[in-house]
Length: 323
Image 1 (cartoon, rainbow, N blue to C red):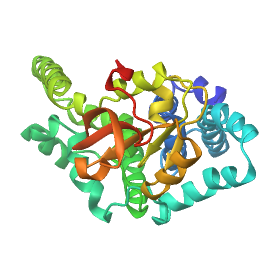
Image 2: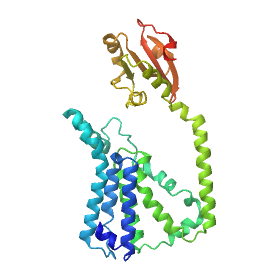
Image 3: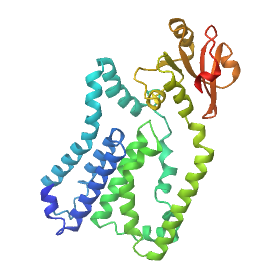
Image 4: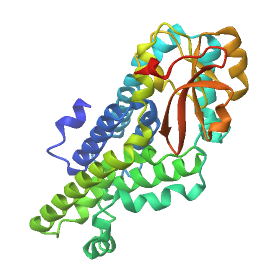
């Protein structure tokens, strides 16, 4: 890296490469390196592909790439090693192998399996709002593909998008590591756009985001709010708790609970109540008929269904227990 820094002011291509790699590392650290390590590693390796006109020695380029991968792996180690130190071998194998390989092959239950073309409709959104301007498409046709910086950014965006499309598990936010490259590419294409136009578009985008955030806070966010349930859990920490349904630790985190919440399927709830007769269970359900066998303490709308707190029918508790 020091060798590359010393040449930044002498070699424009080296400056573009170093800046792009630095932006990638910042994104990977800030956005959660657990997901982005593979992306940043791929991006950094792609930096050495278009070497035509690249005056920095290839040993320096490989060294910078290796250093970038190590830096991007470091945030993962900060949480991975403490977790593995407290976990058994079975959990370690599940975390390191089954989740990783399962998301690639689609054999993981929560791998978010999507079709191959899932990312194609999302790519124009990454270039918004400039993709809606005729000047963007004119600049795209006139782009200088012989310039090293342009080829580097293209080799940053396309291979990562293609490799992610081949992986079974797909989520929109998996493309976040591409944003620095997209920004660099758009900036090079918008050189002919006036500063006044850029200012107007930027202010319009800020206004749209503010209005959209306000509307979402009023309409959508309450449907995903787990704070009422978590407050009841936090108020009754002395009781055994279970969650019936797909659970990712949200209740335990929001309630600052120091003992685990049992993760149960629907057919396990009866045996759990038998072992914990004074226990309370958080159950996600569609209709009241699904929970008639239990005593309801609290209920709220949640993600198109209902989420309630229940006890066994032989353990009646007043609804004021959560107030």
